[in-house]
Image (cartoon, rainbow, N blue to C red):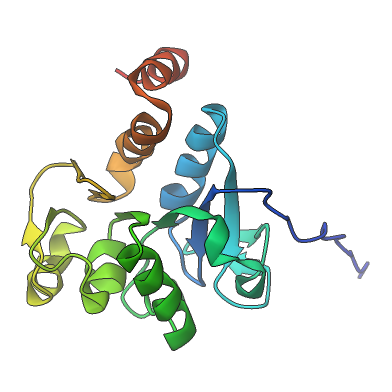
Length: 200
């Protein structure tokens, strides 16, 4: 059997504020990669971050993704948006370690922006108190977890708050991504993307 080696490029070095999509084992590939694609089409600076030191991250359906950087490469000073895709309840992608929890809480408490989809609003943001008293949405089957942490559950596919954008699941991913684009780049850029991507 022939052994195949893959050359992994050096870790990315953002030059300023950017969007960071957080990838842990078991992350939902559609909910992570589609927004990355859409945001990059809009000209946004977007980087993928492994939640560990291993930049090779395995998604929910078995796709292995090489993240742009590991968690130790992430500088809080560079964070404009943190984006969390969903995952099964048992997966690392929605069970943050203490250090990452502290990064997320500090970012939020300092006025930072967060976007989360599917299981992430209930399982990532809920335990951190971020959705407490806030109208948001997420995966319908986790509504109980959502409300247990004080979230006001909405049936809308995407809920856009002042600094928080949440969405229901894989089927709402494009609308989720376009909502982030609209917030960062404006309605005209969103309109152009919708037309080019044939999103009605």
